[in-house]
Amino acid sequence: MNVEVQKEKYSTLQNAIRLLNLFSIDQSELSVTEIANKLGIAKSTAHRILISLESEGLIMKDPSSSLYRLGVSFLSLGYVITKNMKIYTHSSNILNFLQQSTGETACLMIIENDYSYVINIKESDYPIRYSAYIGQKTPVFHSSTGLAILAFQPAEVISSIMENQLIQIEDLQQKVDFIQKNGYYVSMDEFYENVTSIAVPVRNGRGEVIAALAIAGPSERILPKNIPNLAKTIIAASEQLTKTLMFN
Amino acid sequence: MLKENDSKYILQTVKNAGRILNLFTIERSTWRLSEISNELDLDISHVRRLLTTMVQENILKKVGKTYSLGFSVLHLSGIVNSQLNIHLEARPILLPLVEKLGTVIHLGVLEGIGIIYLDKLETSHPLKMVSFVGKSHPVYSTGCGKAILAFQKEEDLKDTLQKIEQEGIEKTASRTVADVDELRQQLSEIRRTGFAVTYDEFQEGIASIAAPIFNYNGEVIAAAGLTGSTQKLCGNQINLYISTIVKAAKDISKKIGFSYY
Image 1 (tube, rainbow over the protein chains, first blue to last red):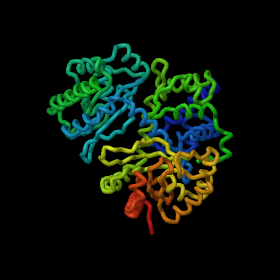
Image 2: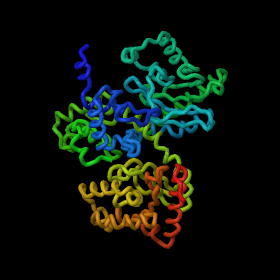
Image 3: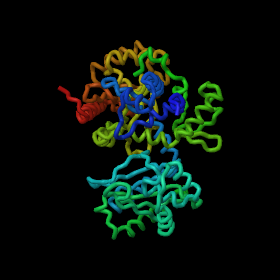
Image 4: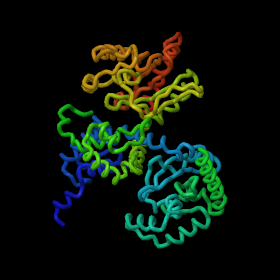
């Protein structure tokens, strides 16, 4: 392929968005050079995108280190999203209850465009616990909650996501069957070593699966013999959440 | 902070996309194409192109003809939130003061020439003050804003004051500062005393008493401020309020690595 064609692949705005997406929890600060290299653009272009984003508060420059990070404006934008989600407001009590009764981290996830996102979370009080943050995203097939939601979506949605993510899951049908039959999904050391999670779909008032509730923690605490009972607790919490959504 | 000569390198496409993003607020969380174009005074076909890309990239979500913020934004806000530990460090210090003093406490940071509240702690009393975490308030008429400005490095302060001058001061209450010169005088007094008292400046009848928070570099990074009615805060207990918030701000600064000697 011609190099010039490759360069033309992204518009300036797309590059600006790709730039924002370079930041992560593990890499919260980047230099202009790192940014230019990662995006495959000239350093001068990277600099111009950065000052343009900075002018709107979306990027901040640390004056002492000259490293860039995401701007505080995102905090207020994130707040706009959660504040406007009915399910966010109504899930806090239910997550507190789940965390109290199981001792483990409880979270609420939704899926959108191939990813599952943490919408609300109550972390366990144990010093060793499953930890995540609101807004954290995971490819749909890489989380028990993603699968729990997916199992109730039309077959074409599932296959289109698989196509987008270029993956084949051999036992997907078995997983889907299990979730549909039992109403929950268990992952034991499947996505992360030594992490077990149990996920249950959440329905809205019209019976559509719109989210999933889950607990997650170290596999030595969430033992196989306790899983059916834990699943029952989460299913009851999920039904409670549906009721709350219907009456509000 | 942007330097003046940077502005000619600004890419309008990117800046306009940022302006679109910042239209979405608690008060107004959905927008239509024509509304965005009107509000920002931008050509409708230009806005349409920007919106298409922003939707493709999950920055915005389109339902019917309405746009709202997409989940990529929530993801980015999660990253910012988890790297900003200041409010986690500040909370345990400020929380006990809320009940003790019976006032609202804000933790604010400077963003441009606005103050954004990272945290708002309030009493269980049913009468609450309306202010939003994440919303921008003018730096020149809030206690947190002045407490931060007063301790900015001279070159940064100059920059901020210049921007305030350019955008103009909005008089929202009877005692809002008249101009940048008056603000400068107040700031040097705050720098001398170590705390800021404002009343009837942002909102009539509302006062705040704030003190700066410093990081390990000795740079001012935030401020903690009590907010309440002017009558309550500026009454006979004012000295207690001042000493309490000043001490709390110092404790937070120490906790995040600043050393006082």
